[in-house]
Length: 150
Figure 1: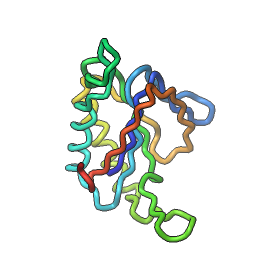
Figure 2: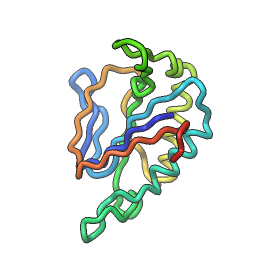
Figure 3: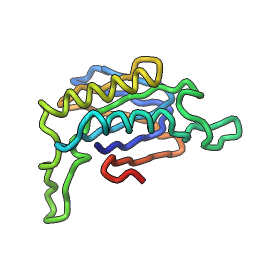
Figure 4: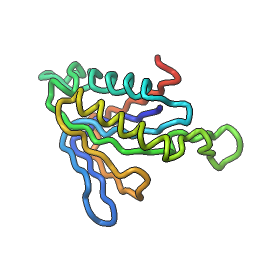
């Protein structure tokens, strides 16, 4: 699994002109699921995201996690994070999991985040044509890949 985590002052998802998800301060998490992924990758990522100390403390330093600041999380599925671009100029998405595998892993990941966060996590709609709006905070952007746990 790959994620792009963006600390935001606000983020939303709009589908067919209707806002379907909306958060104030917190994280926008873009999630890509690879065919080789299992629930174990989602477990690891959910814990890392909730414990990530990139929220501002009283002095403005990145010192707090999202639990300490009462922030929200919006998760959006994004198979394009699995792009292979080594050859040519048109990316290949062959490594991305098919929907029948990706949807349960996506839902499991969101469920784990919900439990760890202690409140509902907002989501996009898997496979939908979504317009995602956000106001970056910082900006702070962290990329994680379970195949390369640094």
